[in-house]
Amino acid sequence: MTERTPGPERTPVPERNREAVEGTAVGAGGLDAVPALEIDPILDDRGTRIIVCCGSGGVGKTTTAAALGVRAAERGRRVVVLTIDPARRLAQSMGIDALDNTPRKVDGIKGSDGGELHAMMLDMKRTFDEIVEAHADPARARAILENPFYQSLSAGFAGTQEYMAMEKLGQLRARDEWDLIIVDTPPSRSALDFLDAPKRLGSFLDGKFIKLLMAPAKVGGRAGMKFLNVGMSMMSGTLGKLLGGQFLGDVQTFVAAMDTMFGGFRTRADATYRLLQAPGTAFLVVAAPERDALREAAYFVERLAAEGMPLAGLVLNRVHGSGAAGLSAERARAAAENLEEGRMGDRGPGKTGLRGVPATSSEPSHHATAADSSARPSAARPSAAPEAAPTADVTEEHGTDPDTDQDLARLTAGLLRLHAERMRVLAREQRTRDRFTALHPEVAVTEVAALPGDVHDLAGLRAIGERLSSPRGGS
Image 1 (tube, rainbow, N blue to C red):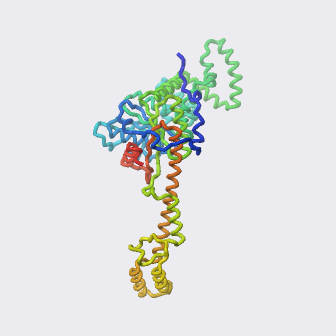
Image 2 (cartoon, one colour; image 1 turned 45 degrees about the horizontal axis):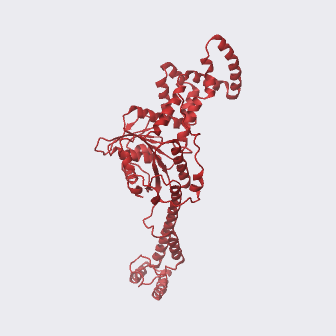
Image 3 (cartoon, rainbow, N blue to C red; image 1 turned 135 degrees about the vertical axis):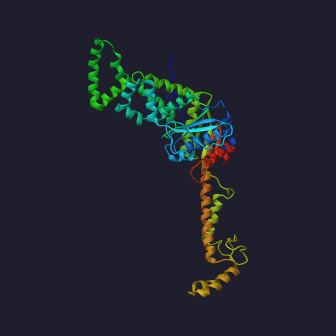
């Protein structure tokens, strides 16, 4: 039977999305041009067994995965969330002191239909150890686990974390204790590493170099060994000079012990890859409304399509909004400049109906001038404490204190400038989003409004779940 190889190299991602996301308009975009991503139907569909949250680092994948887990469990699903994020705050938000390689039940779930939530954090070394212990006899397993090369490989070899995430996914699916598995993919430089790294590690473990090191153990008979030993001794001498004799010895010992296991790595990676392509899997691409994050999202969307993996849609996370969107950045900035230059600061007693509220007229008032001329001498002249009371009475009579007006004007100008900056951020985020939607009008999108602080409890995760499931994310 022909072996199916996961094909990152088979399907190069088109370059057409680069200039679109980075700044060149492609065509009409916007949320009205794309379908809305509906989260609850995905969570409620019993045919959905795996949800994979993917995207570049720092966009909120872990929190999104946890919020989806809470919402699904409270809607009656038996859920396990597999996270890669080592931050303690996520465990604490679920009411757990710490997460480890074993699923832990999360208390406080309010579902009435038997829903449960479990959570775990991937321990890639422990997962690798479990594979060795499951596929080798005790003596060989001990030799592998104690081998220095294996310890380095399992702790930090490139692609190990991504490969072990897929291994753990396969293990959880095989146990069939949960009807929904939500995976938070590892943080990495590129979102594509989640699909590419397992193949790279599998290729290494099943590659020519490893097979060459395994060759002495596979040649039988004295004649064969005598012939091979001549070549192996020459090769070992050369490699020993390049890699160091001790390192080469550790590698050869590791390879000899792992001889019966190498084929299993590629087989399991292929099986999990096929599981990700199955109809019961849904990929959610998570991105922030920023150029780099959406560029990674665009690459991932096209890669998933090329590999035949089911994409549910895009979660656009941490989107900023404004309750005063009708006030443009230009108008807010102009108003702030007027206040700072004093064109809106000259007010008379008849112009200010309420104490402490700046007037909107920029025209000078003769009453204001008179009031100012009568008030300034007493304010500027050094005086004893008893003289302060008449000044206060005059202030009440005429409506406002000039110093207070100036403070209010400065405060108002500062707030207007903050609003102008917020509106510029909104405009930039919308342009970046619209370039993505113009490029991928077939991708369903939901937006999640940015929260003022970090999520630290189940209530916060519920709030995010509600925003995810409301129309357009409730942004």
